[in-house]
Structures are given as structure tokens and as C-alpha cells.
Length: 417
Image (cartoon, rainbow, N blue to C red; front, side, top):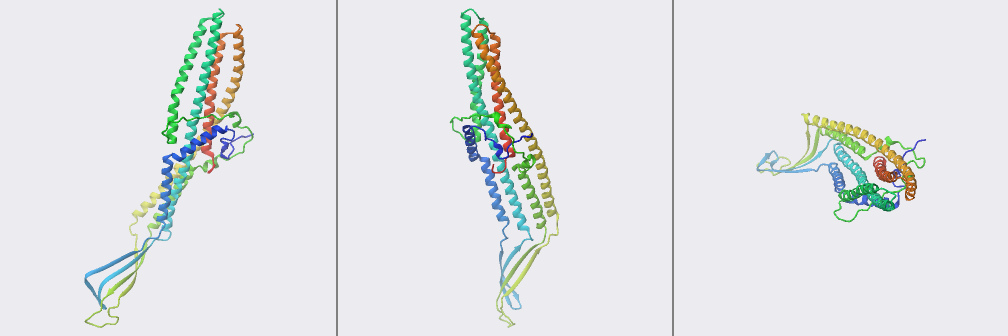
């Protein structure tokens, strides 16, 4: 039987607690609204689209006027001025090729914008779950200190009754010092993690940043038979790869543009000459103005610039194809790694939870025996410390699980999911 992730948004928060998911989504929303890099890329793509409209427009006509201090004598009279109107006509398909080059460049920026949005959510989620795990560790350490204080009181009571050794009190003091230090370090670390979150949110306020770890981890992984998806197909539609596809298409359009720019350039026009009447003769059409159609052509005799432009565009296309292939392999490796970390974290979390349940029963039995002066203190303290280690490791597995889940969402989610 095969299990995989549900393709619809990978059910990233399907079983999560509503409060935690809502808080994370709120942070993501603020980050998406405030991130300057996202705004910059969006504006850049809009500028490229505007440029494409300009490149696709027809060239403007050219109007000229010529006159001389000494009129030019002709058979019909003196030519005093000449007006010319020219309309450049690009080679067939040249304006379309220029427009498509800019359109593909704009689409590549839009795909990059989508990839940045996904990546920003992933970065916010990672910091969010670090904050949530930090709060859980703080709560565990506070509970550990309280339990050690209760155990210390029990040891002192046994010592006062003459049934215990003073060295046990010293061992508890050592454990308390370690937990107190761990608690202080965790408390000092939270502002640093909060600053990292504020940087992502572009927030300079000092308001607290709450974070809640979702519950139900054991039901998130393979809780039922999940729909099989084609990972390679999903990865092929990743916005990063689609951005390289658009860059490659832009390079192809650029090569086509360079070829068409190397063709003859034609310009059609009309010349209108003002001619004065002759006073010394009376030829037919004396003083009649002249109207002459014109045809100009730019002949591309020197091809070095055109050939160099075509070579440049083709090499750019090759470069983007190689970059895309490398990115595809990197995304696949990232998926395999994230999938392994998800599975590892889920299995480890389940194991630590089972072990903690057993240690809880052992600890209760040992505590009862110690109260009855029939238990061993060393085993009791070692069990408590082992439980602390398992609780901290289980919290870390929770954080790693949800971080890997968000990474899979970044890799496999469809556009709009």
C-alpha cells in the first residue's frame, strides 16, 4: 500500500488546530503585504508589460522640411521649399517579435514573483514553528523545575526522618541549576527569533508575537489512504522552473527579433516641392508644384552585428536551459529530503510519545515507592531527567515535521492552492 500527500494544498493545515493555523496565516498575510522584494518584482513585471506594448507599436511617421537661401532652379520654375513625409515599415513580424520578447520577460518575472511568495511563506512558517517550539520548551523547563522542587521537598522530608542521604539533595540542586540555566537561555533566545520574524513581517513594533504548535501530529501522516500524485509533473510546474521556461522563450523571441532586424528596412514616403512660376519663359505647367512618391531601403551589407546578436540570443537560451535542468534536479533532491524529514519526524514523534507514556507510569510507580521508603532515588531522578530529554526531543520533532510539511507545500502546491 502506497501513501503520499493529498495534492490539494497538500492538506497542510487540514488536521491542524484552528488557532495555530489562523495565527500562521495571519503572519503570512502581513509578510506578503509588507515585503519590499515582492513589491519590487511585481512592479518590474508591470514595467515589462508596459514596455511590450511600446515595442509592439508601429513606428511613427517622419515629417521633413527643406528650403534654401537660393532657390533651386528647375524647368518649371524655382523650387523654394520641399516637404517630405516618411513612414518606416518594419520587416514582417519584427514588431511582434520585439513585443513577445518583452512579454516573455514579464511572465518570467511573474513566475519569479510567485516563487518568492511561496518562499516567503516557507520562511515565515519556519520561524513561526521555531517560536512555537521555543514556547513549548520554556513550558517544559518550568514544569521540570517545579517537579524537581517537589522532589527536593520530598527528599528533605525523607532526610529529616533519617531515611535518606543528603547527597540526593545535592544531585537535585545540580539538576535544578541545569534546568534554570536552560530556562534563562531559552528566554534570552526568544527576542532574537522574534526579531527574525519582525524582519520578515517588515514590522518595527514591540508587540508580542504569539505562536502555537498545531496538535494531532500523529494523524497528519498517512492517517488514511491518500491520493497518489505525480511528483515530477508537479515539480515541472513549479514557478521557479516556469520562470526559466519563460526566459528560454524570451531568448527564442530575441533570436527571431535579431534575424528580422537583419533584413532590409523599408520606408515609404511622399515629397512635395513648392515651385514658383518662371518670369522669363512660359513652359507647360509653369510654376506647378511637384508631388513625388519615394521608396527608401536600408540594405544590411555588414552582417557582423546581426550575427553576433543572434549568437548572443541562442547562447542565452542555452544558459537558461542549463539553469532550468539544474534547478529541476535541485527541487527533486529538496523534495526527497523534505519527504524523508517529514517521515523521520513523524515516526520519532510517535516513538517519543509512546516512550513518554511508559516513563510516566514508571515515574509514578517510582515516586510512590520512594514515598513509602522502598524506592531508589537514583532511578527516580534518572527517570525524571530522561523524561525531560524525551519531551524536548519530541518538541523538536514537532517543529521539524511542520517545517518539512511547509517545504513540501512550497514544492508541490499548484498555482492558486
